[in-house]
Length: 345
Image 1 (cartoon, rainbow, N blue to C red):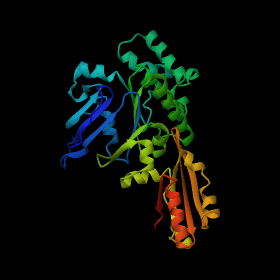
Image 2 (cartoon, rainbow, N blue to C red):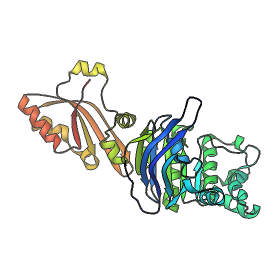
Image 3 (cartoon, rainbow, N blue to C red):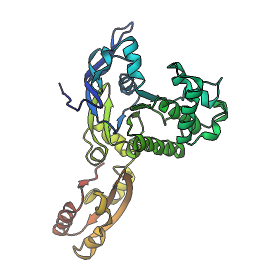
């Protein structure tokens, strides 16, 4: 059993399992999940449909309770809370949904003010707070509009504003960008990063999109079949994925190989994939191989991507020449890149 140690603040899942009953018997949604989310960080959980991501996130605000194990939020065991204590704890957490969940019968301002009104806050005070957060998300001019008059991105901004109305310490994002186009997704990611920077809000985001993890999260846990199969910083996960499912997700952002027909045409010997980090991407590697080591180099693929404050680059090259020259070229590269590996069929 993996034990998680963390400060009293933040979110801790300690050996959490969850079963749901059914006619055919219980179904395991989570099995022995342990991870810790540092206060003030942005933590991503990625997995395919059915991995258990949504069940996991719903335990943070007590919408689901573990069958076994503990979910601690700032040192409080959420699974042990009931009634008024649970409702009080839930006010410290805001939630953003995939389908926006806006009321069509009232305006934007009323949608945003709704959590406060349910808490018993007066109309004037609740509307004043709603106007504050609508200004923060850039929708002041839409305060009197209805949901049917908004674009998908605007609806999600309203959903974010509503989640911020109580000034929560924790923000939960359940596939919040899945229904949005890439341009709007980028805007929502930037808004979430602004919330984290401006208010120090802890953000836990679940998604099946590795691009979202790349651009938003500090750390990531990869889930499959109710279990965490890999976790760590986003940068380390991109540089050194170990689980097969993690490599699949990384490949959606940083392609790992070449089409089979290309490999068949050029041959597999001396076909290498180079992974580079930050300043390594600016090195004149190819020119040195050709002019100083006397090998021929066919560059078949190259790209770069930014991951927060870092740049990851990769090249796939075909190196030919005398065996000793090819060996020298590989040794030279191995000293100057993160990794060098054979590209195989």
